Length: 246
Image 1 (cartoon, rainbow, N blue to C red):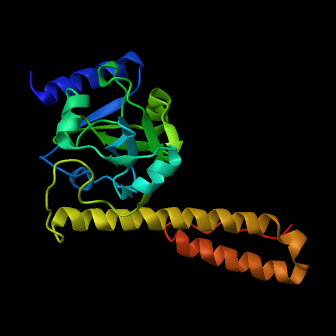
Image 2 (cartoon, rainbow, N blue to C red):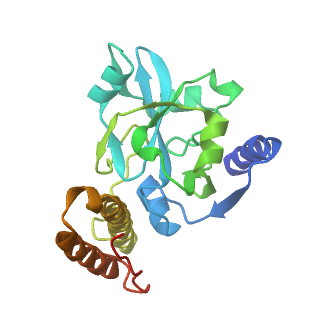
């Protein structure tokens, strides 16, 4: 049985046993998580990649967004360890059966010798996430809450911005201006702008709820008018809601 069939088989078994809805995805061969995100038209901030580190001689699954990279100094601090390094390809083959190096899914399995799973805080999102399904041609799409409840990873902060070219998996030099990378760059930019717009709207709503405590009546009408103008710019496709001071 091929690695692809074997990996998908036990992943299906785990998810079906827990009655967790998921979607299988298949794409061209991709050797980095960012390439997978581009091929599947999925944000790199929501694609969970697994980096295997050897921490004090023991393998650890580090789960983080494809758009970020592991900082080993932060790993050592977060896990109170003396030594942390990226696993070599032979080490990944030794510890993780039925999964190709660089495509290990962020799941627990008895055959993996109870390897700890540690998630970076930035991987916590609303909605769906995606991860590689043990090969460089298969992926699984699943709701984040379902995955988190299934795996119950330890949550720490060990990543920094920017995807790494090589984090212990098969090295592959990609063209810096490839269409896939450019498409992913624009997708990531839109994702960041969307998050910023949501945060600005949340803050504007908070300010508006408290204007009567902070401002004089004449000032409140000006502030509410400015907030409505801001909402219109953030949501040009929606009609601005009318807000008036109480």
